[in-house]
Image (cartoon, rainbow, N blue to C red; front, top):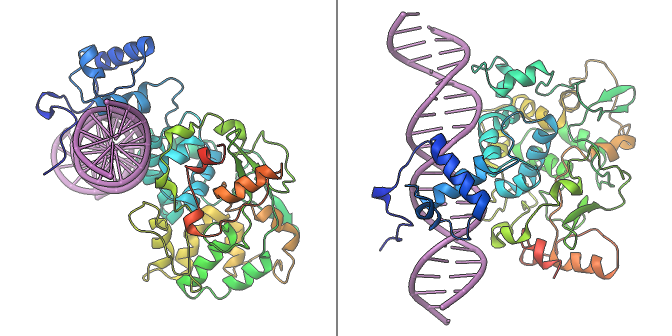
Length: 383
DNA sequence: AAAATAGACAACCGCGACGTA
DNA sequence: ATACGTCGCGGTTGTCTATTT
């Protein structure tokens, strides 16, 4: 026996919303609110729409302060970072981007960022669609895998080589891995596991090893992120600026959907992701790193989007400038490098509580998966 | 100029989680 | 404890439009 339909499908209009419908819905909600019941709402205002459809229309389009299109590079970076961290939890990702909806971000990812990540768009920079935001991006100087000058300067210098990480001013934390090790490791990128391991070590969050430092902690009492040993007190350019997420409604986040918020890999770099949670290792990254018909260069080209072209060139042994950045010479820059792929924090209940008890925020390392909580931690930590 | 193709975005659908009686 | 209604999420599909052939 199937599930009962939420509305009478036969008498419900589908498809694009008319301006009249929009106006009806908007004016009603602005005056009366949703009444806590989306199913009953369309009948109240005489709309032949499913309640779910009304909710979606309101949340994704009619709601005040909704931004459409024109994603900034910082937003791109944050989306990618979060996607790497937590996968396709679009609602969580959207919570970090004020004015953006999960649907918007999801579409943007599927149509744009995914291709950037895979490096396809780079080979075909002339997008077919002329009026889209891609033109805007190109116009404003944003390009895939390239340093840009129209934005804040996130670059750092290594041996006179300007490196441009993609993550702006994230809290820098000690990494249990030097760039030299990363660079050395990448010289032997002859299998998928190696690349995965590299990403793990660059990003940290792919591993469940307790030694991995989680760079940012979430203070559930204030619904804010903070950083351990952060040397960057400025939040003005920080995509993890607590103010950006101050509007997270912990009650709006389903708990169990976020339980598996780290990607676990075994010693061989094989993913041990839970199935059916939408929390699998991001498929695109899996494609990128695990597709057998791509050679290493092709795979790494795709990673340029995340790592920066210059870094990728060096990793690929294509340092045409002849500047030796290996041999440990990168260790000084690693604090900055650590921000390359660091996602925001997802922490455990127990460690979060411990942090509260100590009156300070500390590194939160999940003990095991069962104690590792996702969105639920937003409420649990504060309780 | 017309058809084909592809990108972007809006909207739908099914399912799991949650709240409540 | 459980059944039911609702909400919210993520995947997918549909539609429109720009670009290419």
